[in-house]
Length: 270
Image (tube, rainbow, N blue to C red; front, side, top):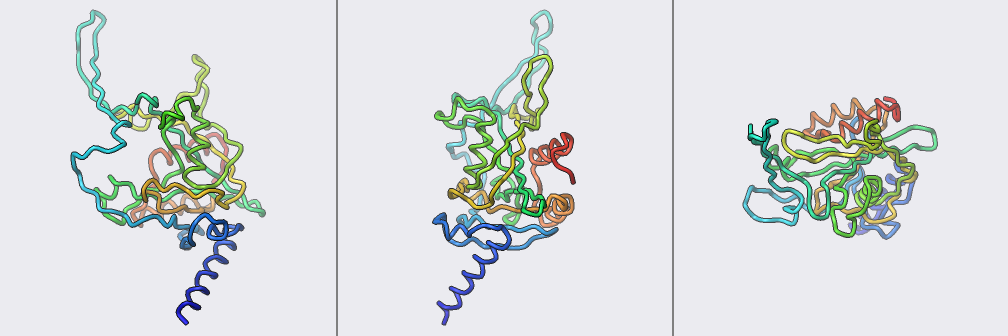
């Protein structure tokens, strides 16, 4: 009896997923077990990543593999005569494999009726959990460090954007377009600095079309950091952001910038 009820519940989850996302459930495509599907504020829908349990984080001196992505960088200012005038300390993202810049993608999905949605990740970032508690979350568009591994050391910002979107969502996107402006004096797009008083990290922003919400590969969750993905009606994005903030879930500065750039460049309308 219990086994029959469980089977029915599982089938109901699969049918709900297919109704909401207009695609087969990942468990039917050999990409993993059935994730939980829940409705959220402002017409949004959340699909769980089925990631492992969120651990408790503490500040320690323990080294990690991420040490190579952030280092102390000292800077000294000199006057026109070469005399030192002051000093500054920064955190640098640069490594032997990477210049430290980031590529972020704002994914937009359009259904058969022409209604548009944004795909936004919910993440349990260690520093956010440490400062604000185990239920705190950040909301972010897919992103990653350009050339974060030696085998990707020659990739462009666009290459990174495509790779990171695929890795983090398991989906395929097309028509990637930069949200940056070309600097007239250099002929290149200058990435936007994340926090110039602290770090040299800068971000290249892109917008892309998601043709199908069905994952084609199993998404990476970065050790359980990615808790799932929100499908949010574009017309309700402002209300959704406000509602999520009341739940302790906030849009990152980078993601807010991506959204603003898309609006300024008239790539989306809210």
